[in-house]
Amino acid sequence: MNPIAKLFQSAKVFTWDFMLVLVNTFTPNLKSGEVVAQGHPGYKGKWPDYQPPKDGDSRCACPALNALANHGILPRDGKNISFKEMGRVVNESYNFAPSFCFFVPNYSANFMNKNYSKDTFDLAELSQHNAIEHDASLTREDTHFNADQSKPHIPFVEELLSYATGKDSEGRALLTADDIARYSAKRRADSQANNPEFSLETIHKFFSSSNNSTMLRIFGGRVDDLRTMLVEERIPEGWESVCQARKGLTMASFNRTAMTVEKATTKFLAKKD
Ligand code: HEM
Image (cartoon, helix red, strand yellow):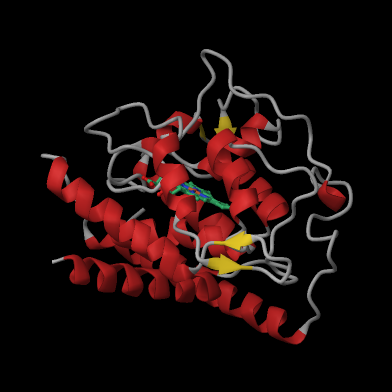
């Protein structure tokens, strides 16, 4: 796609997203238990059978997409997925707005040099280094240390969860935006110090804080749920997205959280110097 067409496409997506913000503002939230619509996997918290990946299955650096394959919502082998299918199931399962669910799969098709409407991909292709995947992740070792981005590095996940300082009304542990930012700053400092190939361009800082913000905006920072998602890449029984907005989590709303997390990460990094 030429740069002018790309610009028009982005303008269309941002306008669409803004419309969804308006609908979310003026319509009531979805009811608890009905964030996943009737007839779809996960309705009233009933998720299809979980099976961890088998040898030869394709998985990627994204815990949330791997979980969809582990539950058979995406193909269990993680292969031959269309970009539209990925967007559709992310919308239906996690309640991200359809604007986000077009934008990110379309961005993925572009970096893979594939056609969004016609081509398919295997999950592993999403882990192309320095496309969306980047150094200093919270759940994966840097590519320099481990080229296989398909599995979580459990010591990082446990360390991240141990940073939780929040509590919900029933006393259960919660990760706050500052907790996540503090751990992200630690990962960035450690990677920079130890990885001779370390890089984190501005766009990857933004992807890093966006991915990290899903833990707040979709999982509500709940440590128990995040442990299941990040360690086993499994959706907890009875779980639903904490985003109950009728049209889902818009890019406008999500990006505000990502900016807050990125600013806090930069602040904690500066304190380390
Ligand atoms: C819409 C399609 C999506 C694509 C193409 C995608 C892609 C990716 C990629 C490539 C990474 C690796 C980034 C890194 O190097 O750390 C990643 C990480 C992550 N994603 Fe996704 N993702 C998508 C949707 C989601 C959704 C819906 C959620 C949450 C419900 C989510 C949560 C996460 C989390 C928690 C990480 C881990 C961050 C880390 O290890 O630092 N993603 N995603």
